[in-house]
Length: 322
Image (tube, rainbow, N blue to C red; front, side, top):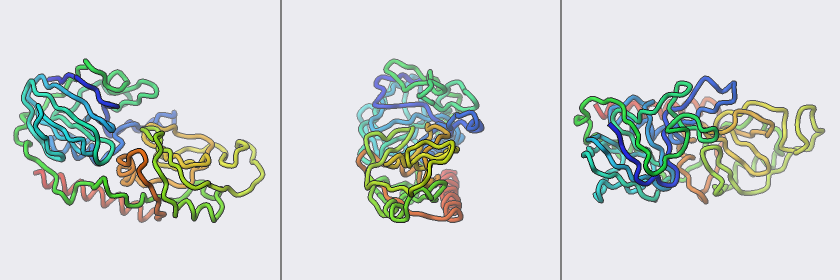
């Protein structure tokens, strides 16, 4: 089974849950920016959660199906249509051979996910099908999709029993919700003055156009650093420290914050003043350009509780699908 890309959209890539176990050689995980939406899309069509989906950013694709299929679209509202008929979000629907699925501009959120029963079948590279475009690795030829590409789909049992599967409204994220993004402060927040740390947490930051799979660059008040004598091994800029590893979601402050996302470098010499917790990285990935971000400092225990709560929500969704 396969589907043909008629219109690729602004940026559409093959993604899964990511490429792990290679951080020590500088390989970031890549994978779906909004893992929650990706996992739910797969659950709706009966796939394992690590099956490959299509991640569409801001503006989606036109895809022609060469055989019957069962699909689900989750994440940002991009008004998907099948031959001009509206397709419900967060619900599994059937597609007939020859039909075209068209995914439009995002009106709420920034990224949507298309899962197909059987999963997008591209070769695994380092145990993952995720696309890492910076070095042309994984996914479909290591790049964003282009018109004329033909994607293979993995084998799937008759998926007709999944058609109509849907996620209850109280389990669907509200991408218009601009609630605070929760962070665990550190590893290098000691470099900021007390006043600047307070301002960092109190400010309304704005997402700049330089927000992508590598990092979300924010703009807001100036950040002030504690005066110091330059340590051996660190650069002269006050935001420099001796090189360290960067957790995914960590917040660099080369004057203005950059939140490192799934395609980011894995280490370097900028101070990282906090780390966005994993459930809120999904929410952050849906904040569009010029959207607002403010931070809430929480403890590691609270971060672990938030991750468990998200896992319980995923379990409840899977249980509801039967």
